[in-house]
Image (tube, rainbow, N blue to C red):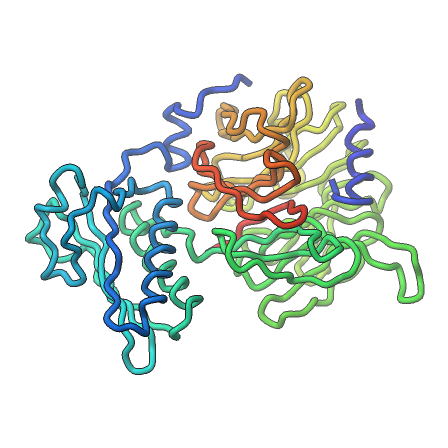
Length: 447
């Protein structure tokens, strides 16, 4: 059994680098993820186009806004077929009683208009509480951009995030975030980036070999990833190393080769350090290095493979990682200096790919129990209580959290090949984000 993880690492280096379960409706999980609470019933009528030239932009804005709100997990969106015939475009046109009555039954209405002014696309948008019609609008916003469909999308994302922030107790939405992932659609495994909803997929790296495990820096300016590289310009011998890519300068940054097989980088919460796995001393151990590649220090000292470190994003004082020191791959936890190592998972099966929730209280991971496929689980670190999120629908791996703590993104074979999927953190609201090629190892950006 001990040899399984090293073999998996060898396969990963050749191609892909590789308690009691409680029901998801339990109170601790609802509270921890922010899902499962009562949702605001929200109506979103079409935004009025003030001129013919903005009709396409208005249609795009409305479609994206509804899609963002539907995906948020915060609102219960009223079907357009239940909406009153009179649609407001200004606060003075809102008939609160009509929107409050059945079958609409809205608590709030998001509405507005789209126009072209001063050579710009202008969206005037409001959010009103129809249960309190005498109060001023909860939100009154104006958004400006170029008269393009892409700008209409971005303005819709902004309004959706503003609505979600207001309705969720100050936690902003995720509509303006991005997801990095690995795709082979260009012929090699390279790093790609897309909007949170799968729109705008674009290739970032062009290494020509294999790139894996992308990780956003906390300020979103850089991506760290595992890359196969040639040992020298004239050599055909390859090795695995950590590469950094600047999304500001659109180029690779200098970062030294650290020796051995070096993989699975993870940024510290302040962006000053990277945790990683390296075989520079023989075994794969966890190390921490400064973001410029200096001040390397070793954290783990065990036989076998230690890999896939992940920092607690709140305290920065704990690192979760995967180790087969007990016989099979399991999730472990240690202090950020390597002290106080303890196993989190039960020892059953294979548990891999730990990812901390933004509040630093839970870890999502992939777990193959008995002879089943890998499924996704979430553990409350303090109590070790565990919830299963996916159930035997293909092979589900590599979960990471959205910055709102209400969503997860992961790779799954449920539609055939590996593709990127998104869901709410209680396992519902599944959405497939990629369709072309094989796509793996997603990582959600900060805001």
